Image (cartoon, rainbow, N blue to C red; front, side):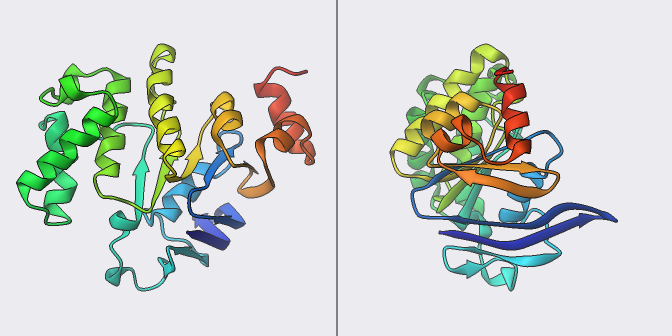
Length: 242
């Protein structure tokens, strides 16, 4: 489903990704953890072609997005949900979800509306379809953003710290939607600081630090017996294991 090989990325003279390689199979849930500034979000932006890589290659669904992307509709291959919701403020929840299928995929309005209504119901927002973002909580806005990404029927979903901008009491409603998607077999790569989610849902956990992929394994291995000393130090800090 997804192959990243020796991905390198520079911002000026600063190398933020150093030969990062990863494989994701169809239906996998891969969670990327690590300290702030380790390159996790940049890596996700490279996977969605929002950032161009300087070397290496990225293949999604047998299509190399690092080559002739003019022939590839990236939004039909990859959906991405950001920390900030990035909803159109002048559009209702329903209109936000409909926008992509109508303008990008040229879906008939009636069909797009039915699809969008179904997706909003799926994330528990059947009663908020006609609300504007300013009238929605952060958790509700993020669930609209997830519906908007799903409306493009992507092969893989990327989540860039989707709960980091939310009040603590709203985190659960977004994680529950993500758990449902995982159970339904959606291929997902998730950058998160929610260690409980990583332990419960991930098929594999990846630890990144200073632009490098330092450790990869099943959650039980990474969380209870990390091999890399930097992973141990990080987990000791965030899990308060001492």
